[in-house]
Length: 156
Image: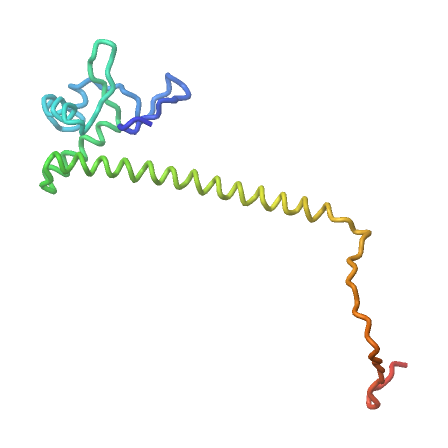
């Protein structure tokens, strides 16, 4: 994934997703409630990085519009400066990437555990059943006599 969170491997190039760059700057500005010049400034600062056409025109995705709204809310409602907002966005992207990596590692661990259990079952199945373990007995001169208890009832 690139820093903007877009997946470079799209299954169908005609499939529209949240990451599909479809909005020109004027439409993105209208949808986000911001001035087009503000969008250009955010792009220069690296807060929101829209895709570019061959002619270098900006194309915004639905995810970019959502991010623009988030930047506006953090700036206006929370009073966070643009440098702070940029850091927040970077940290959120990092957390998302780490969560995805943790999920991958959990799947790998689960797969390894299943493989280990299967291999263990194969080893147990390969044991020869016709062999009996031999334990060497110490030779002693002791004599053990067994006597039944007198008050025990005998089965009839």
